[in-house]
Length: 202
Image (cartoon, rainbow, N blue to C red; front, top):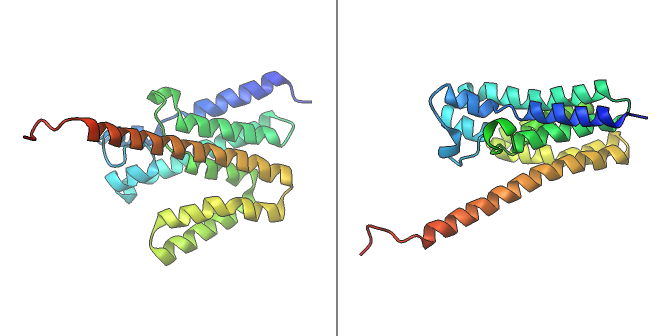
């Protein structure tokens, strides 16, 4: 039986790893605050759109590495498979609400991908391949990412037990929550903008 303190330690370390604001650090090194440009999301997609594909590559690698490192740490510290998922979830929460960046983070998709490369390598490899093929076919990485992420549980169900598929689904719910909160914030911002009188009008 795993000691509760080890689970707490795993979750804490995973959260701190996820909280490293890779995108923010890379952008600030170039004098840019991602929270004030583009879609204002401090993650890879906004970094790529703002800085360019090559300059944003460290963001992609860093965000994936955070999830992978956290999941590997969970597997090392725990004696049960689910501890790795706890660590991966903690890293995703840290990425979405980072303590080192005023709790304003990204969507956690790449951090999820990194965790799954460690926790479910065969389904993860299949999802990455699907992502690449769809991205090339549509010339839009966003579509490839959607296919890869949301098709992952279907592929995982072919190779692994239902409990692990459910655990991966729980991690995906963090992505859904983060997207939902971002959409709500954008809607509120739009309402505020429409409700503010234009000083140049009239």
